[in-house]
Length: 296
Length: 225
Figure 1 (tube, each protein chain N blue to C red):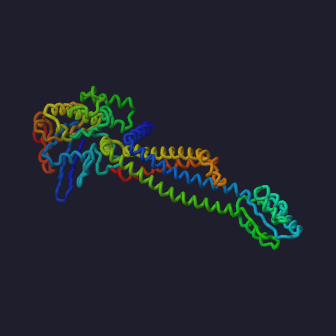
Figure 2 (figure 1 turned 90 degrees about the vertical axis):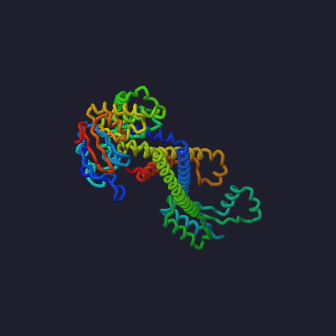
Figure 3 (figure 1 turned 180 degrees about the vertical axis):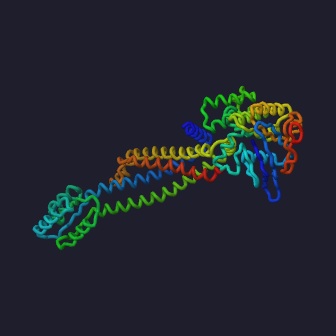
């Protein structure tokens, strides 16, 4: 315990002795981890959004003009009995027109040009399943092929596109973070190397007076760990501040994202990941450096 | 006890820094190791604390065969040996007290014990009043005394000093050797490399003379042994 305390004190003293280089490296590590944190946040947020989005998988089927109401009722009944379906809502031509007028009042004048409603009757199908599956897809396909159905619109396509985007962001994040993490490892590796050379005389004296290898090595390991830990703390603070500031100063960005990025959703797991990653990077980079440069 | 059995050290092909040395040094002896520059004095001393390893032969320190001592157990040997260098090897950014405390802190000794032992060592070399000074703020002779205090602070069984008076004038050199004599009285084996003939004359001790890596004479206090 005493040994660990001494090692921690020595590590802090050593960091303070090389302030400029250590602060610089801390900044680079914080930046690297911030990039990792941002991608992690985007990925988690979009994943969260798609999960919420898929609760409401909705398919709308538009019918051909003049289709008998009985055929539509038969289809509605059949669908209501389907285990996949949560609810079926019928919209007549007039209901669709009213809905359009309500949503786009400024375009109401266009409808005045038509003698009868230009909208086809339709049914809106809500599914119970939270995620897309082959059963839902084949049911949608099956209904879409019916002769009474003119066209279909499925919000599942949206979910798929967002999932693809999420995957892309995750891959891009892993790639970019991978490069930056490698750079961080390289930086800490070299900082520890510089510190070893800077304290070469002290290390040689310690060896000659009977210090064990671990007594000499542990402060360097702790040094790497401290750099990584505080780098990740800074990255977490910056990330948290950014996420809190964006809703205040960049409202238009949030509106543009149409709810895909919810800045209210700040999972703590991101910060835990950042701190574990940062400390591990520091510790292991230091270990590699010690193994290479601190030989007997 | 220090025992050398047919020890050789070769850095360059066909050139021996140490050549076929066999010798035995008893516990509590005071020995001068002498010879011209390049005679092999430093190599001989370095082999005792395994800073150098023999190319051939065996070295035993307190019955411990150094050839069989792995690197990760080297600290056990070095805790039994106090080393004093000609260039002192003091850390300039630490106070005299901190420099002397290094061996004890490296052994994870408690603060109270460190305090007591450092003060004892500084008292022996007459430097307690300088304990809060930095090495660069004291004279060369005092720096050497700090180095001696650091060597003895951990109660070693052997003290090795490589040209400890090399940078000092005659009066200071005599004082330094007197300190080693005081240390030796406590039963610690002292081995000093020097080429200062005045010192050899003033302090009649066993003298080992090296020439081109070979032990050319081993003169006891009372004559050739």
